[in-house]
Image (cartoon, rainbow, N blue to C red; front, side, top):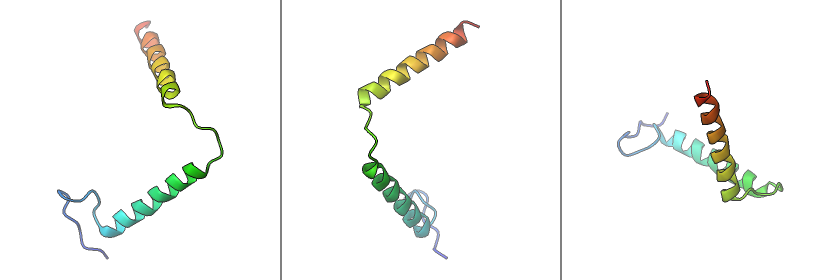
Amino acid sequence: MDARLDPLIHEFDTLEDADRYDKWFRAEVEASLSDPAPSIAHDQVFAEMDALIAAKRKARNAR
C-alpha cells in the first residue's frame, strides 16, 4: 500500500493512483494518435458547439 500524498501538493492520493492515471492517459493519447479517422478542425468544433448552444438557448427561451 502506498503512503498517502499531501493533497496540497499532489493531485492524486497515492503514487500508485498517479502511476495508474499516467498509464491510462498515455494509452488514450496513443490510441488517439493511432486512430485513422480524420481529425476535426478546432474552428469547426467550436462553430458546431456555438450553434448547438445557441439552439438550446433559443429553445429554452421559447418556453
